[in-house]
Length: 379
Image (cartoon, rainbow, N blue to C red):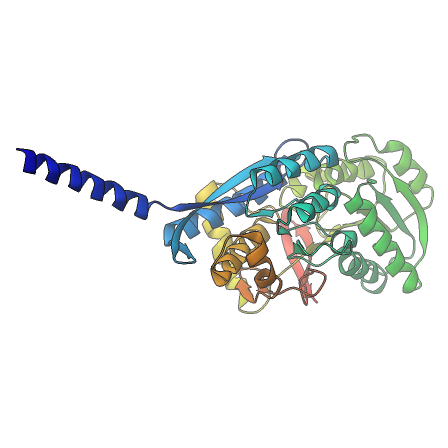
């Protein structure tokens, strides 16, 4: 009986030891985006991109430094507000997450980047395009999309060269993103010899644009550029129509969503809107993107808005750096991340010495019958 008891105890201890040995090491990765407020649909799109990547990686099994790892997504809402963004960043830093994917907006990404830098936590933004983000010298800051210098500049040249704009008006929402991309657009228009007939501003929460649109109407613009997000752009297009402003409407990736057509309703004419998305694929890459879009819709029951594929790739890039470094310790995998070479659904990803993506692509779109229609991919 005593021998049997000893054997039972020994077996239990061995079983427990086996369970402990087999237990996964948990690695926490933060994701931050605006999942409340006017652009919550974009924030949720981003979060779902990260969630899909984490679920797939866990299903395949990730081994870091010889240990099986369970990845855990810590999703936070910054509401597109800089103050909330820094509060959330501090929360993630205090939790000692291994890395952060985000934020969505430049206005939240830039102030949060100092907190992550001070904590030594790598940050990859899938969508912040203001050049200042990677020009503060923080070695922890990366992005997987082209910046506003390229995006705004491309749209400015397109307005003059292709749309043949003679009288171009510019509006921005005074956010770091909106003002930044509008400034770059205006610079490119002027460099091409185009004429800016007016520059107005609003906010990212405004709903009435009658005063600024009435002012611009008197200047007879044939192109109106808006630096901001789709939640403001949609109502602005409606009010342009009601005021009889029959101009082309342009904007950056903030307006270039599948939701824009719904927000603008029947006020948007086919071909009226031209926007650019930071990123884009051509050639064989189209099949990978189409496969991702189909997988995403099957999983979440929703179309990709804009940035989900970039979040998905950013998450995979971060985890690959950990695997290659054989460590989830930020200090150990950060140098590997800086030199990463990765082929994702959005194309080849590697970073320059500032943390910007090398050879970043842009995709120009218009809208026909309420759906985005690709014009061209440019680099």
